[in-house]
Image (cartoon, one colour):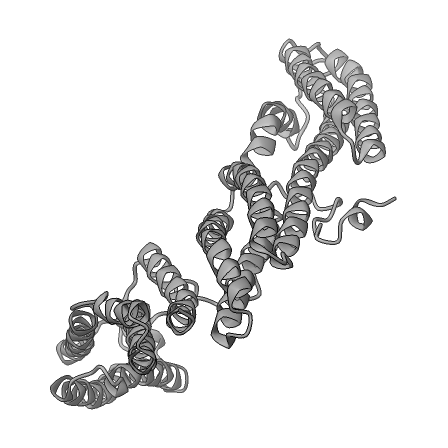
Length: 467
């Protein structure tokens, strides 16, 4: 049976030799160092007489020791493995054969280390050995991934069983098992998170683990409430929302642990933000007049500026933006448009010149100033948004909670609507702040918090209605 058919969630390619973890990299490092030394072969053979190399036998002995060390680890893995025994055994055989081939060519090489063809033969044999060892270690890594995916699959079965509990006693029993499996899964997931070389994948797993823990703690209460009031639509919606988030977190862990790219909408941290676009514009307007071509620079700069102005217009048109800031943003957008045209005219006047004229330098400086003026007005608007929206973030939730506690249905509906609007505004302000920021880590944190808030909002609003 093939590796891929053993588990549908396994999306790793056994033929892919990409090193994804620090463990594989660390195990390969001694062998890579020795092989690289051997591969550094001079293009021209030495003009000296035939002679034995003193360094080559030492290098080859080091390669052999490193190889046997890896073979020893591989044999222990194959012995303990419950899966992939055939594949790992075949990989071990390839490593042994490659090691023997290297040993054979090495004997000839050490007798005549000045012979270029013999040196190249050793280099080729060393590369073959390195490839074989890499595949062996990647298979071992796939075994770790398979072990994690098996835990995810088992956890999903328990999760699905918990959702179908028919009474509170059954729910309690199944939730206890769910909690134990969650703890074991989180331990394995954390281990994988720390081992992955990709910082993006580590961040994805960290976010998924946090979401899984948070929603798992809510699962028992929403399932319990739904068992008591199965006719309440809002409670079913809350249960479905929590279960959906848990399933999303499991899928994210599965994908990130295998290095699979997330096909979701690209975040602002990965694409160009308004802040980074303004930074880029300031760099792009500095051009050598000797190579200036109006057909090339005018459409390019105008397109970039219009893209920035479109982003600024979103800030200006936001419901949170005050009239004075809206007017200032519009004024600065018009001013920067005109300044760019003045700059382009100066470039055309200086085209073909070796040095920039004083008027061109002045136009560049003025363009940079207008860029900073626009950025300043955008920041002022966003600062006001933040101060207005975050003045008292918990009040709408507290009044909703009090209304639900007192059983006042009319007030619950009214405050639930206010709560949703409040959350929507906070998320909007967070996205606006991210659009002007150039701090990638800060953007990631803010976007993750906003996403969690959007996820929890329906649960908070509907749970009040179900009380």
